[in-house]
Length: 362
Image (cartoon, rainbow, N blue to C red; front, side):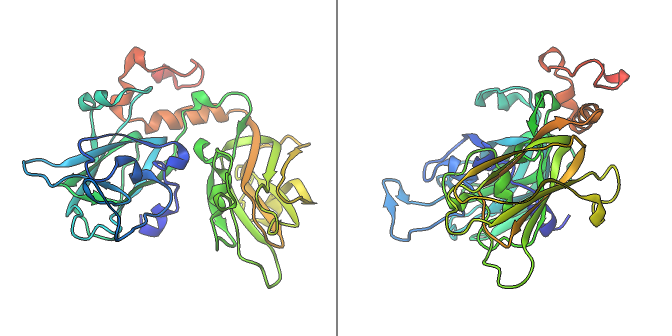
């Protein structure tokens, strides 16, 4: 998998998805939580604190004994990791020359001390790392992980740690009506016409936007046509309500929007005739959260947002219910992606309904 391929997946560790750095063996110079901040690192050359130069990242003290430093990250959303980025921005004489990454999968919410006794699987062997650079490392593991551990050798500083991958939701939590488009449920941006100011991936974050910059804003269109974004839904489902939120977009909201969907189970979504409207082209207001009921109940796997002729939004929701038979397929995918040690949790691991798993797994 190439760098371009794996960075197109969302950052499962991001604070935007409720990721957290739950522990680190040392953070004397700079705190561990900065590792997963969604914004790029910044630098003030003349800023010093009590312990020395202030860095926007995680930095440990100079190691005087054998060993290495590490930090454990709880992924905001568990999933299959396709690649990691170790960004050493502004760390030039104090970056780690080598890094490695391990992963584990655990049920529930154990405290930090519990991770010392868990089984860890190496997903990135000890590898050279360069300073003041976004270091990209593809990962080939096909298992679903809940936590990762970044190790640096022997010490030093890392500005940001990105864990790009594919969401694999525990289907036990997909109950009744769900947001089929939400990134945390497994929705994913596939392509877009324009992301000049910010990406339409922001539209499917779960939290409400606080500023215009937390949404999607494209450039001003000077030619024919309109801007658009295409998503894969978290699961095959039947949309029942669409929410289009233009909050904070006052002078640059779209004039109109259109929402259409397609079902790849019925044929290729590349065919223009495969798409049908759930919200026909309709005017929208600025700085407003709009809700539209869907009249026709029909399964879909993809969603397309068209804005006319351009303009920004903060959030897009597609509420609906799973299509018949979809829950069973999600349970199978979930089970197949679990590491063997996770499957052996026994009574501490909640099980799916008896009719949702294959007979040999009940």
